[in-house]
Image (cartoon, one colour):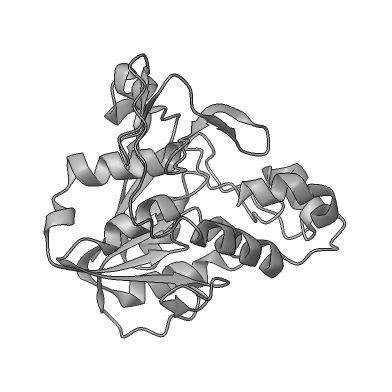
Length: 265
């Protein structure tokens, strides 16, 4: 997504290019590598960096983000820091990949989607607002799913794109079964007591100045826990700097990230 944003930022800030078109272009681009028949694995004998998702070893990763973060993107599967953190958490802290689960994945990332689809015990479905290749084409605020029908929902960097995020969180609560889990990743700063948001930031240019992204509506603070509680979730914050060792963070190129494990009451 940020590749397209970086190239077209001035046009976006001038409101000359709609959000739907930007995301449609990016989803089509990601679709080219969504289901690779055989993923090329790169191993550099001198590579000190490793992608835990695809196994690539390299001396350096690619830059990524509007500011061009160094060593951020895996050159093979395209994962960035948050994807690698999520994968590491799923594979090391849970047994979910080996359980029979009904799984919903919002705005699916190409580096993860085909791996999830290949799990024989998962009943996996993707949902997206803009991508016609998604299993479900829908807004998170109005999911065409039965109440309590999902065991696990993965939603990474999606809620901050929704003006009325509380409506989306309520809908996630509705479709998650009691005892089920939603894994949430968003721009999150626990040092903020209250989420940074302002309805006056009503243009891409203003949102870019306030939140560092033209299509973000907020940077979440510690009160995200309360928003999740309103929808019936008990949330636990997992911080990469506490959960991973310094060596693991350096090797897998995982920056300061937060993951919220939200269990439905």
